[in-house]
Length: 104
Image (tube, rainbow, N blue to C red; front, top):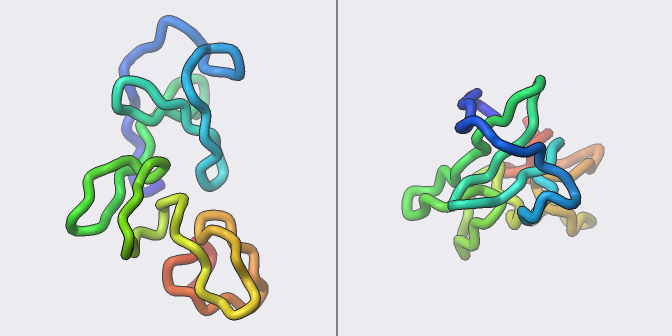
C-alpha cells in the first residue's frame, strides 16, 4: 500500500461477525461497506487502495477491468508459464510477470 489514509472512526470492530463482507487482499483483509474497503492497522482502520488503471476508479478488491495493469488489484493473474495465482498472491521463484507484487 503506497499511502496510509485513515478511514473514519468506527463504532464497532470489523471481524467475521460484523456484517460487512471480508475479502483477502495482499497481506491483509479488507472489510467492505458504504463504497469503502477498510483494513485494520495498528489499532485503527485504513482506507485500502483504488485501482490505478486510467479508466477505472473502483477499489482494488472489486476491480473488474478486463485489461487491468494495476499491481494491487485482486483479479490480475500472473502471466508466468507455470503459474495461475493472482498477482497479489504470486510466489513464483523466477517470476517475470510485470504486475506481480514481488516481481522486480
